[in-house]
Amino acid sequence: MLAFTFPGQGSQRSGMGHAWVDHPSWEVAGEASEIAGRDLTALLLEAPMDELTRTANAQLATFVMSLVVLDAVERLGLTPAACAGHSLGEYTALVASGALSLADGTSLVIERGDAMQGAADASPGTMAALIGIADDDAEAACQRAETDVWVANYNAPGQVVIAGTEAGIAAATEHAKELGARKVLPIPVSGAFHTPMMLPARTRLRERLDTVTFHAPEVPVVANVDARVHTDAGEWPGLLSAQLCSPVRWRQSLETLSGRGATLVVELGPGGVLTGMVRRATPDVKGVSVAVPDDLDKLMDTVAGADDWAAGSPGAQGEHLYTSERVVVSPAPGVFEPDAALAALERTALAEATAAPGSGAGAAPGSLLAVGDRVGTVGLTDVRTPFEGILVRWLAVRGERVVDGQPVAWIRTRPANS
Image (tube, rainbow, N blue to C red):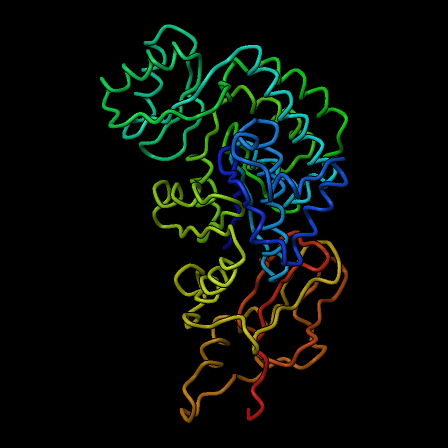
């Protein structure tokens, strides 16, 4: 089961768009530029780090870069069963899930960045990562500082980020070392994000959130504030508003994704920091980062070697979505139901399809699909395969709400000598 995650501010790099200029998905940057009313391609290609470090630019650049990568992954026919984003990345996750349009997402990210920059300018602050400390001890260190400093991110076991005034950070880090922190890493930002010091930004952002249309997410999105899935569109304005002054519960969010069955978590966007957190927070879940086009092949190799992460697909190890592989997509939006007869054959179809030549093993009666055969339904609409071949496995689960064009089944085309 695939889950997509999206990075937040701090993942941006100067020139990070260059690798994507010749990829078809680069058009997303142009579309976002038209919405923003400024040349965002220049921000992704030419801006130096001192310009990209400014909160307003960092957030917009990371958001757009992540959407370029998302578009490239979707062109491969991959869709997630759940999404989550770290801080700013939550907006990317909401666009990816269909809860926000690209236009509304872009306008909100612009407003958020400007609001947070304004709050930071009015009340300067900073952040630091505490390494090798328990969550409770990090909280205690902030409380013992007796000044303006709070836990801002629960990133992974033994990795907590604190934020506050410079004096607050200095006092809390001393207490953190006494409580067992092995290392303190200053984070070069000018604001105490995800703390009460962002209250002016929260007030400003909430006004903008109330003007935007939210939709029910087409795939579940885990919220930063409480690490829970929220499917009610009406809850998201409040969640995004609260996020500015509340800690990001990222470790808990990864645990939620794992608890919902995620076995492969794909980080889409610049950096790769979130992938390391997957390994620490949920060791049984595989993490993969896609930041440049070359990573797409690595992702497909990981997905195709499905046996080590997709439950219930014996024999999938080593299969690839190359020339003999096809996906059947949904012809309409709605709730997917696999064909009952095919579902019963799903567990044996791949083993039969990959039997050694000359072994005498072949496909069981009915496991071969002809062009036009029904593989399931979306609402009242039949989903029929345009290919002849063998069902490898479902790419959508029973009862999942899918969108028009979303892959729902993986087919291996029938060999010519079969």
